[in-house]
Length: 271
Image (cartoon, rainbow, N blue to C red):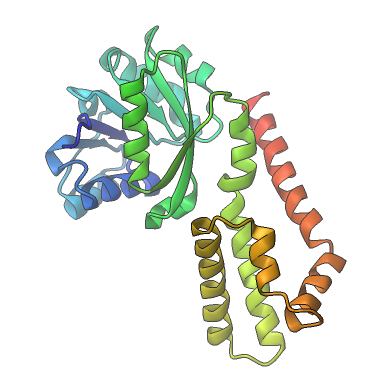
């Protein structure tokens, strides 16, 4: 279907299942084109029943005939899983969404010359609104890059970087960013409650306000500063609110959050 190869999804946790759901929902692959692998029998049965795909307990068995392999296991399980996959995926593209696992580590565990792409996704992929950034190794060809972008595009938008070190900054921004947004959403709703709004209404207003603002920013050609200026009247309510944010160090705090996340990602990756 649409030029995509048979896919093995190794680990059908939240992110693995989200990708399966996105691919099937968009008609990019059929149930016979996706095979999963999952050690936890109850989880395997659940995903198989929900989506109509085959889910094996053995990663090697799932890879039989697959030309693309999505590695979605816990970081501590990567080395053992690669050892099981290696005899079966020499000619396949391996796409890893395992946090903190470098291309070097992936290359070490796979046959020489294996095409590998390392991906940093984020949690909104669970609702088809994620953003993923990938870095390919030197063995990934143009066709395989197209596979990566189409597969990941099933759960959001996709960007490529050619310097793996940039994935640490991606982690600090978009990987951790949803948590920063949730914290801001919570604080925004709490502000409404402070000023007398019922909590359910405050939460609904805060959620839709962030969603609407993000959608506007993503679809507009204008810089965020221009969009901000459009709703900031001289001596108005928004100007007063922005002044309070700046007095509290809002902009600096957000930048420091991205910086701290980036540095921590470098530490975890050993760079």
